[in-house]
Length: 150
Image (cartoon, rainbow, N blue to C red; front, side, top):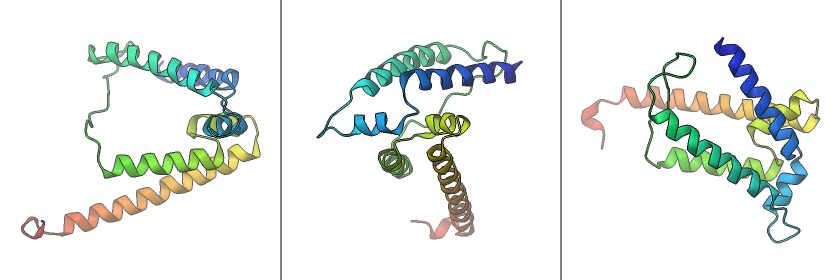
């Protein structure tokens, strides 16, 4: 049942991205071009998404179980650290260069757009590279005795 609801939620999300025009990199790049012919429509989509997210998270915080009876899993990290800032910078640079973020890129891939496929492959390679670097860093950190840590 959870898989069916996940599929329906993904389908609704993808259709919303298509209707809002977010699968078109030119629309995203138009939003980011504040010195040129700026397209504010993405800002309206973002405001709508933030409003829905605020309500959803407020309701979710009051629950321990989801509507499907699964445990509620909300983010626990509350601090801004170097990893968050670095990830945000990489995300923003990729978004500005390609005009895609992960959700719309996957929708574009499913619709058969070559640019979507290139972005998704690059995204997966980046995620793999991060996983390798993070795994290496974790092993290196755990090999250092606590007495030697600053």
